[in-house]
Length: 458
Ligand code: UDP
Image 1 (tube, rainbow, N blue to C red):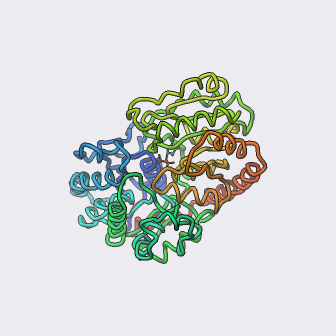
Image 2: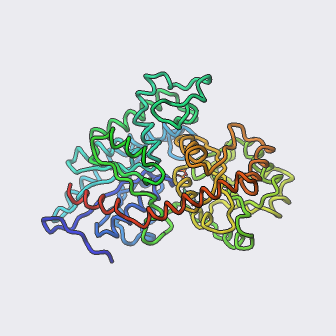
Image 3: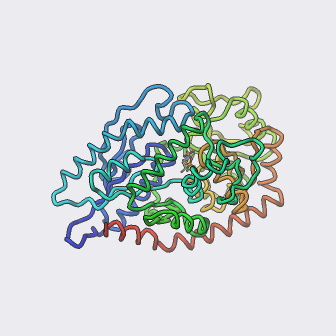
């Protein structure tokens, strides 16, 4: 049991956190909650009914639902591909339930003990609502510092003509955001530029108007320059407390899904660095044609592979149905592959049989690969994934790009290159070095200490 930190008035301090209900956002928020709890702060997780976390898996935290009514149709979280529409709708639908739930938490405190609220950085309405109730509020960014920086720069990029993106400028470096090129700027599938710019403007405005601080799941060894630039641009302090999944006292499973652990025994039967792990995260989905090219590329590469094929990860198959392998490929998959619907990813990446990670470059997957010292094949799909892919391949030199068009011959060639080629060997060595630097960063928990101190000072 952690010591309970007390404020100068002798009151035990509580932090209320409000995660965005998606896998890549929920896990880092719960990890942060556990870290704060381990430093003696009490934590209440205020959460949506949609994708609610399981309180039984976090007995040290308190849980309060905020009972929202979600919109129907394309804007329903998890449906369709219009992420911006979903985020706008979620913000709209959750503002009042969040405010009411927080207000009743604040009223119920005897004596008052809420030091501050931490909301996901995409919850612009919750930022405003918490600050309107007079409680200090911090924003947790679950993406990289580079991504956050490019988001803050978005209005300037639009004025400078980088946005909307023009085909003839795709390979141009973005002046204030190098090494990012125009093609690496945040990308969304079906929203128009105005909707994206509008969403980003709301997030940035709420952050500037209401946040007493920004918490980032990153660290100096990989993003020192980006962090300095962010701090220059913000008037509130920024705390880089990552990599959160490595900092957690007990590496609990924070996932919203149940993993298929049989893949770990399957990995045990393989030699070191022989298996390619393939996963496109919890949200990305691909066209049936791309899925087929991925499957045949893997089959013809000759490389053993562990592939996460999630229900809903292929367009047109339905969100509940697991996509079927292409006809004629079963034998190849049986002999050299293992397919699961959800893997215990961090344990998989830490397994010595893993030689590389074919990833969509979500920020959590990016951090998890860096921390495990595993090189990557980058297939960014949308949102911040293009930014992360650029850093993986260009800045840190631990990844190869699969290219805009997924095609079986290129897949097979690139898979062999990363697994057994000379370039793959060089990337593996750089990944090993980065892992060592990361371990040093994890050994010092100064950032989280100073965040906890700051929270108690508010
Ligand atoms: N993940 C997992 N098992 C899987 C696929 C993904 O545990 O089979 C986890 C992964 O470890 C990461 C998260 O899901 O923590 C995905 O987050 P990320 O930011 O990489 O991508 P997103 O899902 O948000 O696009």
